[in-house]
Image 1 (cartoon, helix red, strand yellow):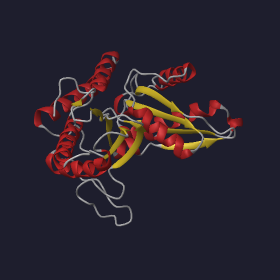
Image 2: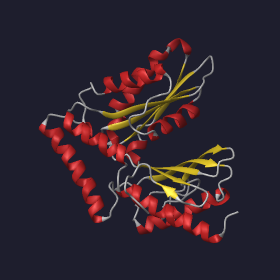
Image 3: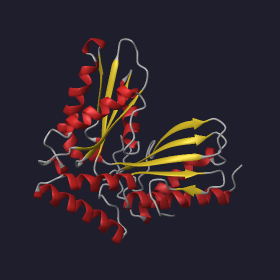
Length: 299
């Protein structure tokens, strides 16, 4: 059973974690961007990457978010059913978002759909968006925070194909999304592909695919090979940073999959921009925490 002090500590830690994730890119993303800058040989692409890194450095120097669109906060939670603060986690996350909107500050982006009035604190109906995976018996909690900005949300798309279309239908669908509306998301992109049986199932999987650590592969050899081939193909489009001519349109292609109906092949694509603000924090039952995506950081 939690007490009031634990609830306040959890809320305060999450406010600070939101600030960290808004200001600093995770380690794996920074490392990949550095690699990609070295691979580009055109002066234009070098200049664009230099501006990216200058922007990221200024964000830390000035204590300001590294992108002006701080999006809407999404929390993907892997929660132990025995985590002592489980029943107040959602309430505390909403409070942390309200506080962080003022203290970071975050740009207020949240509207209630039909009122169309900005709430001013980045909370609204079902916002922050919270998705739960439960781990029976565990006393730990892992929270993945993702800032879902407009640029990386606009290109999202899902479609259900017939089995007669074959898996071959997946490839042009992905390429159309990345080469078309994907430019809205400030390449180089993280491309998340969800493969399943329905639009909603595939869409969720595509978002989860974006959240995977860079450098990881699909658990099935065929899925891993599809990731490799699509990444190779996208990076052969002649598109680079900011959608301008270059060698690398994507930082990574990640696929998450589920079983499917015999009569459907569902595919969804989500993309994330180069400012891939995906942070991970892990708590134990005493609220001791680790920050696996931010080496050397503390809250």
